[in-house]
Amino acid sequence: MRTPRLFLLGFLMLCAGGSLLRTSVGAQSPGKERPGDARLPSKKPPVAPPNASPTYTLLANLSDPRITESSGIAASRRAPSVFWTHNDSGDGPYVFAIDRKGRTLARYTVTGARNVDWEDIAVGPGTDGQPALYIGDIGDNGRSRNDTAVYRVAEPKPDIRKTMQEEATAPCEKLPYRYPDGHHDCETLMVHPQTGEVFLVTKEGSGLSGVYKFPMPLTPGQQATLVKIGTITFRSSFLTGRLALAEKMATGGDIAPNGRRFVVRTYLQAYEWPLASGQSLSDALKARPRAFLLPLTGQGEAVCYRLDSRALLTTSEGAHSPLYEVSLR
Image (cartoon, rainbow, N blue to C red; front, side):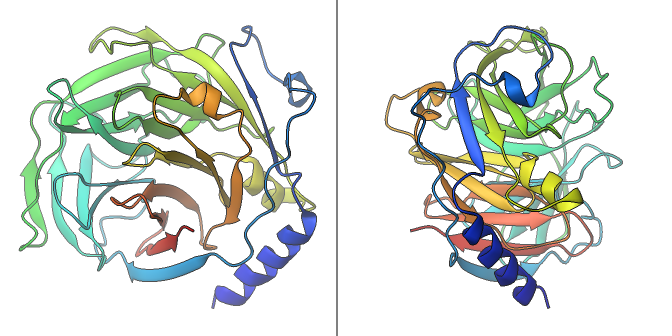
């Protein structure tokens, strides 16, 4: 059972207190970043101590044997209680519509897309204002790719009365991009539900994750140079080795459907910031985030808000991944 390990880890990390994360915001000069490079406000409040008793509910295990690396998850806007997920690299250009029972309602081929290293998925407004899926082909373990992109496609509406359907989406739009300061690995894609702004948070072994934004308006087919709007520094508490790395690597994120909060997760924890109406993400990063432990799974990477913005959903890589719901206070 995973529960005893989870609560032991929770107790130990709670004892570590609030030195796990700091943020800095604003345009950064290009160049290689090191942990000591972050320019932090002198009176920056520390991160809130982890919540030792979040409410976790295991909804189901994903039943579809084709879903072996659930790397991203997003709440459907067109079908209540339906979520979108996808596999990591090695699969075709597929998105899966799953329900709260872990069943696959449909697998959609994303028309015109290619899966090199899909790492996250989000839902936001399309060009016509209707819901669209944003799929992040953003992974770059070797920090050498010149073909990273986000795909945008009109969100399908799956038939919730059936399971294991095979469908295809409308043709997608490709939003290629480059960083202003060299190559980065990335597993976190977020889209603002009202403005359609697209954000990436890089995954760094140092714990120093850059936050980047696509210039607006989005221009399909043309490579955009991202704008760096801030930095999140994830710090390990007292753990060492692989567990210390797991504390410091950003693996997923989401902006709540109501636009009032956003979350970035690591393998072990989630960090959540409030987001006021009309407030920029770079300004919101100046606030003190709330930290809380996530269910301990084999390789937890995916996170999204429930449609009502009152809970998070998480999955993990691996066959028959657990689908957890984390209620927010």
